[in-house]
Length: 74
Image (cartoon, rainbow, N blue to C red; front, side, top):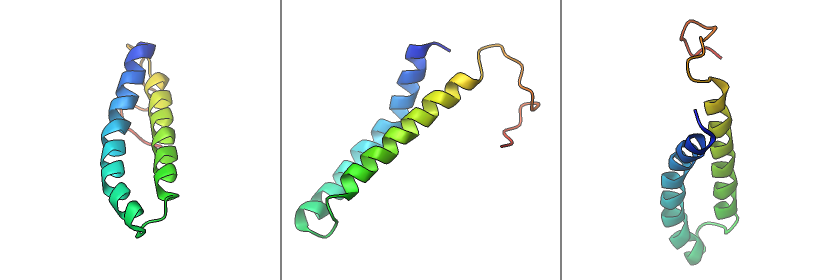
């Protein structure tokens, strides 16, 4: 899997959640119902999610035989 494709998949996994979170948390934050620190926390969590997705996509190369017989055991 190419580097560019891994970045694209990682971003496409995080961007819909980011847009939704900004829409959901912005209005209550303006109204004072939610502290403003929630928005940076959401951004940080989504950045971590994108990084983890990027790394995990690179663990299994195209055509590589999986050692766990195709199961997703941790």
